[in-house]
Image (cartoon, rainbow, N blue to C red; front, top):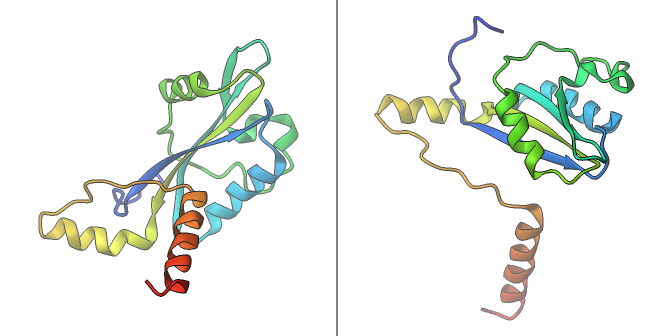
Length: 149
């Protein structure tokens, strides 16, 4: 993986939070499935845990004893998420909670991004819209359609 061409598709850093001071097996398994998905590539990931006293630690998921049985969790990643990122995320966490930081590349947009760069353009911005906001907008649009607007 280290000899790979430079990133071509847009990349995104996600912070997924959990209400307890652990990353569940289900979440780790979902990350493995994401690695296998055709539309994105997991570039790096890092877990941050803030214990009940407020002390924060960070580690690779494969370093957690309770996750050692998750097949595919130890896949090689580029070490791009560092201690500074972990500390910043830890400051957002409530004591007794955890987060998974995931850096992904949107492979589905790779060709469009390359074409854009070829003409001197670039992806200037991106906005993450929470699913509940989309659902609300869909309901509002459906109501307008039903009302004949």
